[in-house]
Image (cartoon, helix red, strand yellow):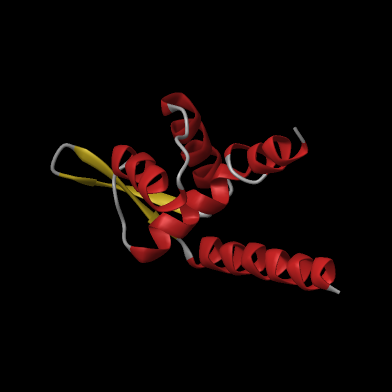
Length: 100
């Protein structure tokens, strides 16, 4: 029970980190982001949830969107890269503290 909650809190509830992690590798479409998260991180974000997260990330200046042909492509911004790095460092610090 506790592990399920931990998993939910650190995956679906923190979806923004995974989205930024995917976009940090290459700009891509929202559909591809969802598929990459499922493949790389072994959980499936909801369709609407992923779009909502992308919208919020855009509003916060962490991603930007552009058009390629008729498709929308998302790119991570320098601010997004900085926040992703901070999130990764946060988890690294927590792990160190838990292992002490």
